[in-house]
Structure formats: C-alpha cells, structure tokens
Image (cartoon, rainbow, N blue to C red; front, side, top):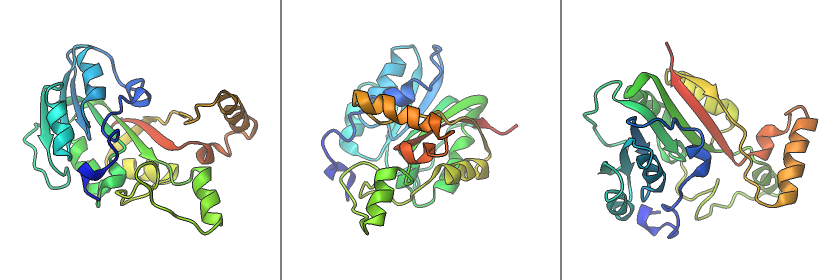
Length: 218
C-alpha cells in the first residue's frame, strides 16, 4: 500500500496524546519522525521550539515544510542523516515503529541523536487490545486502511515486547502512561474503573496504543 494512497486524514493528526507527553520549553530541538502534515510539530513551533520532520509521503511533507523548520522526505530505514550525536532534545515516534522492517536497529540508530537528558516519546499500536483478541477468537485478522491492523503495518507489539524493544536499543523507559482510546462518556467511566478493580490485570487489553516516554541509558 503506497503512502499517498492512505485515507485523506491519515497525515492530519495533531496528536493531543503525544503532545501532552512532550517537554514544553522554548528553544528545544525536536525531531518528529513521521511528521505527517506537521500539525503536531506546528504546535511545538508555537512554543518556540525548533522542529525537524521526516515523512515518507511527499504530499504530506510538502505541506509540513511550510510549517516546520526542515522536513526530510523518504523511508527512514533507508536514509542517512548528518545529525550529530546528541543533537535533539526531543524525538517523537508517533505510530512509526510498527511500519518498519527492523525497528530494533532503527531505534538504536535514532537514539544516538538524543541528548543525554533528552526525551523520546513514542506511541505503538497494541496488538493485545481486546477487540483484536475477540476477532482472533472468531478466526478473524482483517487488515484495514488505518488503526491497529493498518495494511502498512509490518510489526506488531504488546507492552512487554515494547519494553524489550526499548531496552535492547539502549533506552530507559521513564513512563508508560495509560491513555484510553474511548470517546463515549460511559466508556470513559466504566473502562478505567474496570482497570482499577482488576488491579490493572486487564490494562493491556483495554488500551489501543502503548505510549512510552524514554531517555538514554546512563
């Protein structure tokens, strides 16, 4: 599935979930991998941050280039960058790792560009999410245009495997915040309550995305 054949809104997400996890100080240097049309990066620019983007879709990258400080176009696994080690204060990987053939090598390579006390924030679809489990019990594993079973996803992760991925890549996880995907009022009340009452046993079945805030291992 070619990147520019994805749904029209695929590259138009401002990502409140990730934005809330990021440092807000001015003058920080940020790398947004998979920056889309630059909506998230644009919000960081308004805070006075310097934002570089990488995007595989040339159409989305053209739009992002009018918002961000610099945008690189291409497949991140095949690109060579001249960034110095420790160049960025923040690196964002918003639903990127699942699209890669070798996310282990990519994460190790990219983390070199992070400052010693810098922050890497990522979101990764959770294959353990209960609707996926229910479909598997019914013998279904249907790819879609977007979401956890996006047709362009090459890798699938649970929280446990995400933890192993980051540890393998020389990163220390500072936080894995629970962000529920539910919009209906009843679900917003019932699902967190179920999580608490189950002593978080069911947590990994109730979240659609795994969120990670990490830094370099000292």
